[in-house]
Amino acid sequence: MAEARISQAEFTCPACQDLLQDPVAIPCGHSFCKSCITGCWDQEDEKRVYSCPQCRQTFSQRPALAKITVLAEVVEKLKKSKLTADSGDVQCDVCTGRKYKAVKSCLVCLNSYCQTHLEQHESFFRGKKHKVTDATGRLQEMICQKHEKLLEVFCRTDQKCICVLCAMDEHKNHGTVSAAAQMTETQHQLKEMQKTLQQRIQQREKDLQQLREAVESHKVSLEKKRSLSPSHFHTHRITSRS
Picture 1: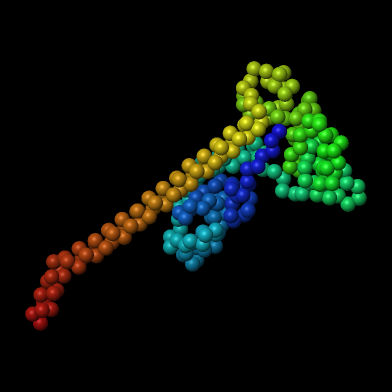
Picture 2: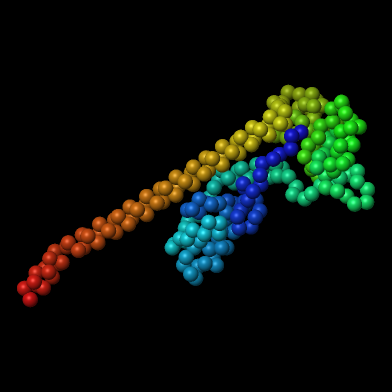
């Protein structure tokens, strides 16, 4: 099965460095966990100047937080699909004594290999279809517990990865595609969601800027009207006669 390579950083809160929880957007366009940005701004209440923890843009008034439903759905889908890989290094299963960092994992042998043992593995199984992938500590999660076969098929009916035997058995009449094809489609969907989200945030910022300009223009216009009011002319005449 093709292993997920969607970057978790794209869905990480800049404040807590974890996956976004209840994501919200602020006027500068950056996204945070609602609790994180609320906590940051609670500490800035006394100064009455609020800033973005990422770009440091400041706001004279505490901005309203815009909930990002689309991003919340993306992050939830990311969690459920287990698209994020474990961050720790994987050790070689063959090394004795000191364990070296594994560079590849074999989906047939269910072992991970350092560069030296990978070369030995490839030499020993030359000509045989042993599929290797980037080193992962989740090999057991990639194998069907019932048939001990690689989970290389995705059942769209049940929204889960299955093996070829499962596809011919209990998932026989279900809609299925290869796991690799499903991964490509999911990555495309996530990119489109990100693009749409960014466009919405940019439009929101544009609308906010136009509103600010309209308010400022109204203030200027009001000041001009006040300066040209009858009481102003009356005061001016009295001053001239004196």
